[in-house]
Image (tube, rainbow, N blue to C red):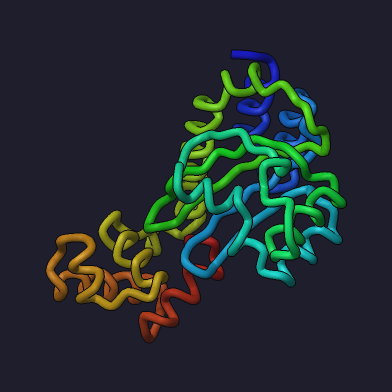
Length: 234
């Protein structure tokens, strides 16, 4: 294990907030000459992200809904593994939206990078990208650490979920089945739909949701979902 990956693991293990994690990701990328990073957690239409891309580029990206045509996002969803990319390979002719996207990426110092994509829980998808404005960057050493980094993302994702549950008062702790049914409820699934997805009887699914509502003093499933989101459980 190289020093950059070791420092990243140590820092994330000790992190108490996103600021520390952002610093760890920036330092890890800088060790390989990659000055930009972006973490994305997507679930349906909900997207959570933090990155150090230029603010103007972030605003442009969101305003133009570039996630729908971004070749990196498309490839990450398709491959769900680590891969190297370069914007020089994107279409360079005509006046298509993709050409405009490519040119604006260049203007904001995003030219080449490496992305790790993987499945999260309950249908979500995670991506971690390190990028640079340099046209030529050697990714050989970085690629050797990517499998370990990918595993780290999964572990950290699960640890954060566990930590969120542990912040609850004892009487509000949910059972694994209650958590599972709650998670599908946050995705808009009804009890019968959750039953199909989990193999649990629909009446039993409703029972778990009712038990979870009691623990949070929620009058309805939508209120339960709102409380769970507000407390960072989902």
